[in-house]
Image (cartoon, rainbow, N blue to C red; front, side):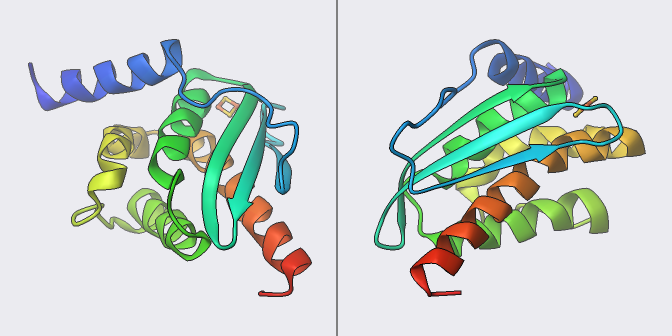
Length: 148
Ligand code: FES
């Protein structure tokens, strides 16, 4: 299979079988994000133990790219620290916006499948929506816990 084909398979798999989809009722932090261009929405829920992300959930109403990205994102950051998650947000944005790579970040391997989306500038916002929403939830948590 070509690399493009493999990437398409990964995106389709996360879209059809989303990981960590659902509301976390007892979330320590949550955020709602939306893409003003299309009206699509994502909610991210975090359950933390100290600085570690114990559980993460998401709900979304949106396109396949935003939903698949949210699924991959939750798999990447679950079990990691808030600081690690913020570094992942930065690495993902650098890949989508500045030609960066995810080399050396095996926990983000599936997200490399979104490289192809960079050819379609309007879809970059679809891939960034869950990550911006996660960053917002992390900011909320840190502001509340006084560690910002
Ligand atoms: Fe709306 Fe992708 S078209 S987030």
